[in-house]
Amino acid sequence: MKNFLRISLFVCILVGGAFASKIWATREFTAALRPFDDVLLEQPAMDNQNQLAAAILSQDTQYASTTPGVAVEDNFSFVFPPKGALLYQGCTYPISWTASTTIRSIGLSLVDAGTRNAVSGGQSGIPEEKKIDNDRDILKNLPWKVGARVWPGEYFLELTSLNASSTAEKSYRFEVGVIPEGTFPEEIQTLCKNTGGNL
Image (cartoon, rainbow, N blue to C red; front, side, top):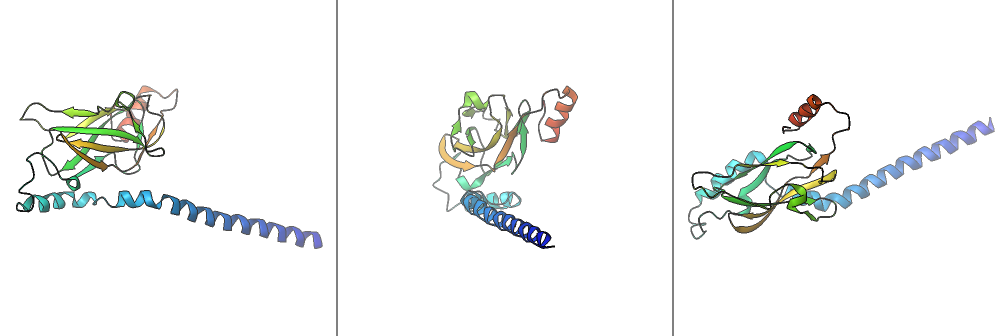
């Protein structure tokens, strides 16, 4: 009977310690990542983008001195990839955005969310600058084929220039994953489609 009580007491101490350790680790992890979440939460919600753009454009007097074609940073936000999206290597996705100005040139970078280092355009497959020379056309999205040179992990997109004007705007974080070996082409096509892209 004494052994049973000792074992029960020992098990209770172990379970209690593990539970307390889990709570402590969760709090520490949340506190460590809070500064990164605060930066992303400062962006206006997607539902309010059109209202925000209309409000800013209606204030002609405030922006009367702004050069035509140069966007204000707060008027631009990424639509795709959405927060927490999983994109697969080998699939092509439309990087898209909302903006309160006509976009004729855009500069983008893929940034590793862990190291905060930009991935070169040659490695990421995202052109560092895309221009439209035709006055009738505007940039609405940019197709991106996620290549095998983009390591699996967490990333975000950074807007580096808009209509030849330097700027800084970030997308939500998203994951890049690998399609398992041996997956049939039909299944790969379905994976791409289900994650917002195509093969």
